[in-house]
Length: 224
Image 1 (cartoon, rainbow, N blue to C red):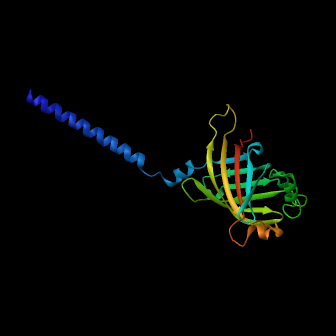
Image 2: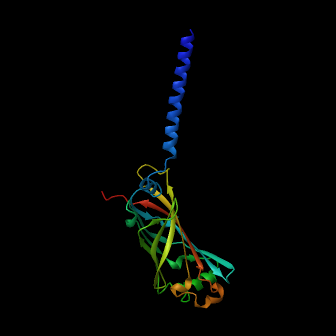
Image 3: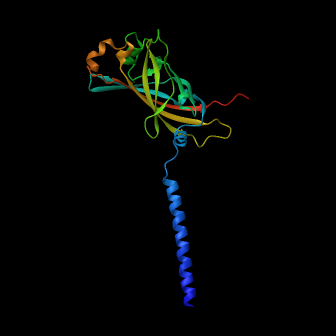
């Protein structure tokens, strides 16, 4: 009888030891850092080309006003494509914005911004951002050194962006839809705009225009 009790206690101890070892192994696997390639893939949508949906994409900006103030506005017409690749050097962005679609909620100011002193939309009817290759700057954000073309001038302006995720409630047969948020900063004088704004931007080398862009894009399906 005593032998049976000791045997049962030994058996229970061994079972508990096995359970603990298995739990510790699972915990180690859970906490083990993911492989860099797998982490990168998780922070970007599936490889392929995506068409920007102009009805659900907007470019916003905030421009210094007499150094301490900020005027906000947006462009309502945004179009283009985004290409995602497993090779980060082959990821690309090609965005076109209609500067005449600018809106700051003040008609007189919008007309001035469309004129020769700023965007001069009659002579320069589009502004573009094009870039190829991205690099990781944090766990879930990336930077692209793309070329921003405004008012007939092109400058390299880094764009930092995050992949916000893919839609999970699409009807059957619809292409995958993804969302991104990006931000950048620049100076209006770099593009030959706002020559009369020296008193508004001061002498700081920091950007006097902050850009935010929110994009939804649909996967481009292969031709049948």
